[in-house]
View 1 (cartoon, helix red, strand yellow):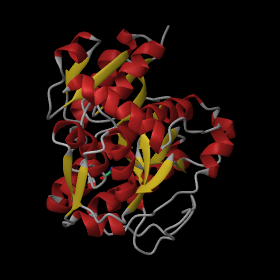
View 2: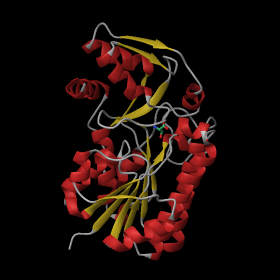
View 3: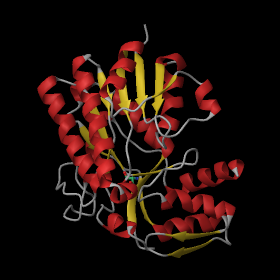
View 4: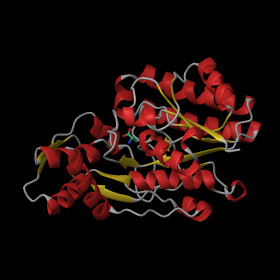
Length: 315
Ligand code: SER
């Protein structure tokens, strides 16, 4: 019998693409999607089981795990970095309470695997900026980053103490066209494409020389599925650095200009600049490459071509 998979935060940027990929791989009826604040599209609702659930409530989570006899959890619920700076108490509550609930339920119900995303936001101003190693200084300056470091430690604790098979990726900025990210610092790298198509101009909220690690959604989905399919005995880490490319905001604008010559990008940094400046420029993901064979398919050129083609179809 196929194992039942629960995806929390399924209506978010990553969930809305990970759920279809999981349904394709493991069967639609075996993937139970949950969301809370945003209702999914009709297409999403028709594609398989969906429950409205607040995962910060452990009883709600327990009922769903019991109802569907869940064996694997992808816990994607999270407030992102920029909104987290505006609502630090809510960010702490949502990010930490939901993860603690998932790990407690995983321990108590013998859940076989848990996936939980960490982020480049786990790093901070004291972290080496270039080719940042997997094991390094984790002293973030945002509440979002604090919840990611605390979450990583909690995952490792539940793994060591209770044997929960929890796996995590420090995602870089994720770029996609299907569902917009909400309230992150790397959102400019998504918005720029939409504005380029719609208005031929974009006012970017970070400086043009801001370099951050990034990844296109198909690589993000591939990495997530691959890590979860990896042989547990081969994993020396629970939390993995991951990257596909690094570019400055200006390099991204130039790449778009190759396709849309009239496109103009201006730069007006706001409070998110400080967050971006606290994160690495490039990432060493050799642990992921060595332990589970990670290799990205998309660079900035290939991604830009695909993003522009897909967004044109949408708008
Ligand atoms: N993309 C995220 C953010 O900007 C980083 O995890 O908040």
